[in-house]
Image 1 (cartoon, rainbow, N blue to C red):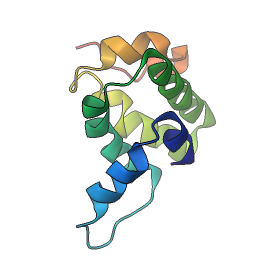
Image 2 (image 1 turned 90 degrees about the vertical axis):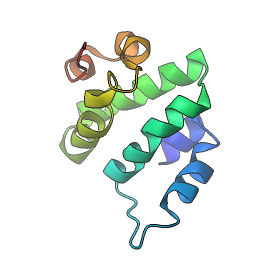
Image 3 (image 1 turned 135 degrees about the horizontal axis):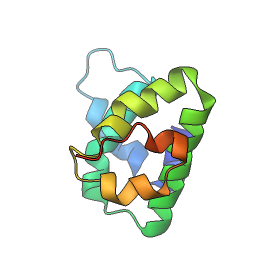
Length: 103
């Protein structure tokens, strides 16, 4: 979460509001990324923020394990569904790009 807060300073407040009604909110990376996707559609990130996010996701994929799984299943696989694949895909590492659907 701290990396995302540095990239998107308004995201922690958005995330807190997003989980305030959850009975047992989780701070897992999967949970954070699930909140990030709708945030991105509203936030209108700058080119620099897009690149920082792409670098963050590329590092998560390279790290493997839970980080890779969260980046893949909660963000990269769904970029096409929220219309962000054309923005983020070119900025990602080759390894991370492999998870992004082109549809």
